[in-house]
Image 1 (cartoon, rainbow, N blue to C red):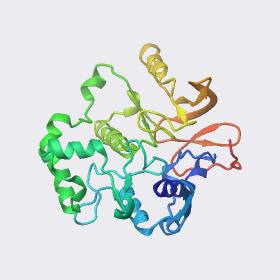
Image 2 (cartoon, one colour; image 1 turned 180 degrees about the vertical axis):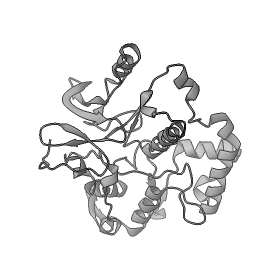
Image 3 (cartoon, rainbow, N blue to C red; image 1 turned 90 degrees about the vertical axis):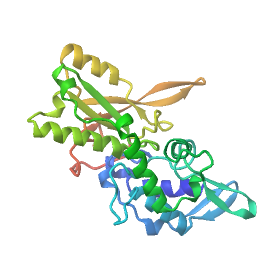
Image 4 (tube, helix red, strand yellow; image 1 turned 90 degrees about the horizontal axis):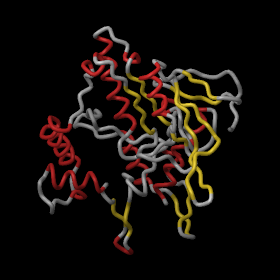
Length: 296
């Protein structure tokens, strides 16, 4: 409950930037997180009231910052949490377990825990929860050094492009497991490499960031880019490159999940969808609308 409350608090400083106050964050660059204001926020859980502890806020601050080296610089690949993604629950990175008088303890993310125990440390009994930051940095580096050649992803798609291949890539901005910043960094590395070769990456690769999308699923009532495959088909077969995607809400109807009528325009990166009162406009990061914002 406490973690969910700080997530809500973070979202409050970001939500309206896309022109719609709906719990879905569409402009990460416009987020202003007031960590001091989060401490002491009231919440209710199981009929009992509580307040956000300063230690929880500090954990959030570190999770948002990402993995840092000894000099306080974010390491390559150590991407932090972004506002809008859930931190508690399934696949959450800030889950806790409270057991009576023993207090509460962080619950390691299961996938990462198994990766460290079985692949990096090769010790099923290794206690991930007791690692120091120095040990965690060493584990991170060891994993990269040992396995990058096997599971690393090259951002050089020259041969793919030369064969006439097309990429339509989208990533959920609320992905709580594979942070959207990782996908963005991968795309940017490829874009800069192509640029050095005199190639415009958008000739063969269009990247989209979908507001409200979790890891492989949308937030309840959030948008899902249901027409992505059709846009890719049109690009490959008809030569029509996608300028945007049409994302529809996923709703309940007679016990079934169906696509709703609300449509959100997802713009090709780095452009961002902003509601102008009557429709979605694609703006560059930091660009503002003159029209009055209103709720959808």
